[in-house]
Image (cartoon, rainbow, N blue to C red; front, side, top):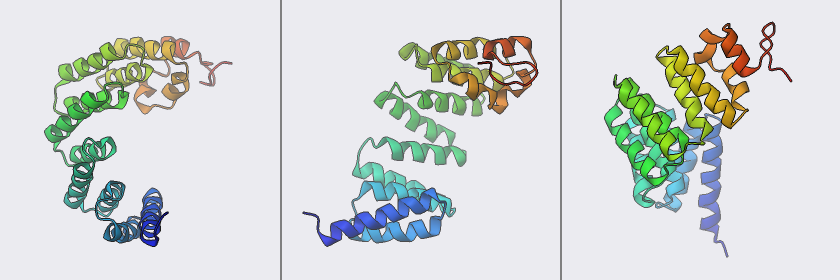
Length: 212
């Protein structure tokens, strides 16, 4: 049976998580501090505390909170990814990549990890390594439409038209839902007027709406 303390630390945690979602980070931090006073080893609260600290601009403390969440729950993917994203924002790219490699070993089927690694390699000016990373993801997950789509986005970033069209075609063949997503992606805007691009997405050239 849940004790009063159990109910209270969970209540404060849930309030803090809601405040984080609403970007009310100072209020979130207060709630999470109450939660952790009652249960100091609550890994979920440490993750949310990291989010709140990041939201109020206390980045180093946020990194420490994410790290502590991982200490409490080794391999905690959400905390590791949050730490990776913050390291990337702080231009600590090599440290961020180390975390992504760790996460990709844990879950090689997660497409966002391969795209994130590719993005960071490109940030370091290592475009060949960025492409190799996406290809590695596709070797492990050849039917993962999201990786094909990410690869098309990568080629759009380096202005490789043929790469955009080929990889976007593979993504749409695997999952037609990427047709609508491509139409709202800014990276693909330079190709909207190309007949081949419109044909690939099956859009009406006059309205740029997807044909039924």
